[in-house]
Length: 336
Ligand code: 13P
Image 1: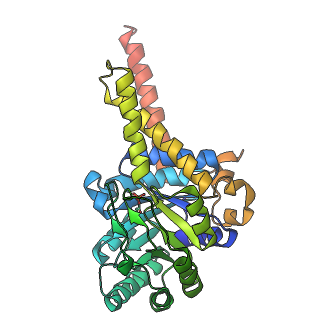
Image 2: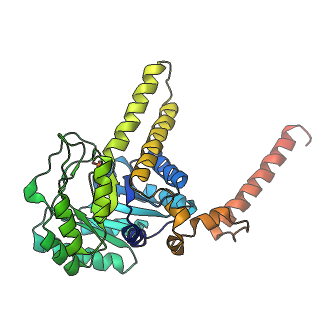
Image 3: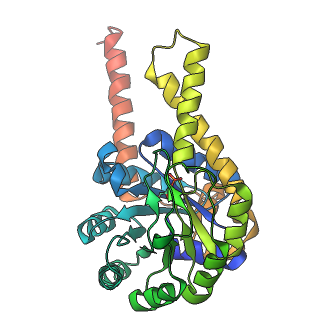
């Protein structure tokens, strides 16, 4: 069921787990991620980063994501990742995203506050949640070798001020995390994270999930991380699987076989992450999340829900087409 980010993160923050936020660049990613969330009975965030707009048109893909989210038996948030301007934020909201991230991390503090506040006012007026970033998470999704620079780490005192001045719902932090693969071992500053949590008082978001050791994820979750962004490693796993398959069978010529393999690799990686993030089985254990998501009731209900108008049109059209086809078949036998 399509839900709001604040509802899901509030729950995660309260119960000490994190929701995985996985970037989508095509339907293989989308199918793999949603299948994984359903199998693990976990809430999930499906997100599209503005830097990935070149791979798909959000006006075209979002109706499909919404349709699938609505039918999912677990809570699904659709979020814009690293929106760089108010124009993109408005575009995502018009498409039906239930969350937006505004990334003003390259702006001076006052300007970041001002623009984030504006985004919050717009988004909250239509019930959409807002994530924003303070400090700067370096690197780039899907690339090699980012290095975290301490001068860009989030300042704990500023974090509290930023939250109060903007009214945001979730804060993305820079504590040694980078997008893309890490050069060397990632080294997260947990003391800083603790201080940010105490000063900010809202669910925190860890970007640059790929390459962070499982124990560091667990520690970060105990210190207030409620959403973990993850892309590069999931994408690498898909490529790795495709390479293996091609290596095993050089006769493969069809892209369709590789697409399914890629989707399977993504599903497996997302299931694995969901377990590490502690959200596996949440939908079976925490009934208060059901107040915002009636997904599994719909999935399991024995009653047939009333048809929406477009479903009605679709069914009637199908029936008419079937009748015409059968008639055509009858004509084809020479009976007329
Ligand atoms: P990775 O690609 O490093 O996992 O980071 C993803 C991310 O933070 C998207 O915002």
